[in-house]
Length: 346
Ligand code: NAP
Image (cartoon, rainbow, N blue to C red; front, side):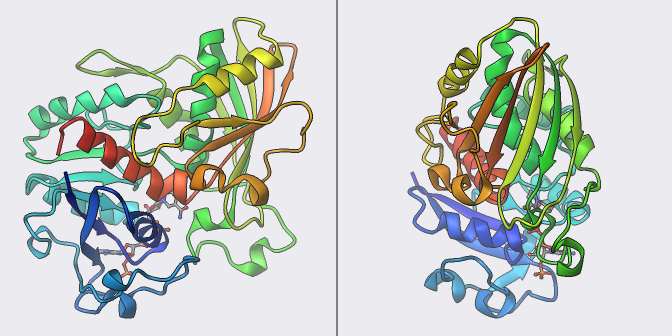
């Protein structure tokens, strides 16, 4: 079945990744691109300052960019991906939901709302059941689903794998790429020869979103996981790929090999964009991996890479990595869209 899709905020950094990833998608057919009033009426080629490493697909280059308004998007578009600034998304997503569109959104507004599924298809696909609650409470014909923040999605699959050993506490230090701040987010004068030990709002997102993602859904509400998460976020001068150092406290006392096996066994999803193996794990013979430049394109940027698993007095420490604008943004929304289609929500 072909699903006609649109992108809200298609000209931005994440919007461009959507266009790249949707080119040649087996079931999603791009039918609408929106942006701000300043871009509306232009062709996509005129409106977007294209910075992705493959050319703009020819058919998209000539598409007209329309306003981010339900009246401007064709009615027969089944699914919208949203990559708007979160304050804009908070204002414009509700009218699309009222108009009956299903929205798979990358923006941070409403991620922690009790009736909004925050979903990673390989980890908590059952949380999509919140859509029924959402429709009852909000009276929307459409549906809103969110994917997590890029630094959260990098570590949560590894924490899910550790949960079988009794996950009590996770402390994380991040080394995050500049693309996570958008093109105008960090100037070269700030970041070259430097590291910035603060990313506004990022620590709170990691600490709250992870507990919702790992939480249990009983058909009516999500109970947050009891794990205590503390994050410290750092911006470093890499282009793409967030690297994270995780210190996990566990009820049990697994060996590093048992932890590596648990991560390797974390199931993938049977969806077009899900990697065959969700978490690739380096063993002791390569203690200096994963690295952003070498490992961010694992599984076309849709996989998680872990390594450096060592024991501590209270559990384990290890490193994990994911591509922040693919698995951490556009790719995550597309995967949620594939899950919505697979489970009949569209
Ligand atoms: P961006 O490059 O600034 O792009 C923003 C997009 O929204 C553009 O298409 C822009 O259109 C459009 N837009 C801006 N104001 C608008 C308005 N008032 N009405 C309608 N459209 C408007 O931002 P980004 O880096 O792609 O980030 C998009 C979202 O993804 C943000 O919520 C961000 O937090 C989230 N995110 C980003 C990353 C990342 O790695 N960059 C990762 C995870 C999540 P014009 O071109 O016409 O201005």
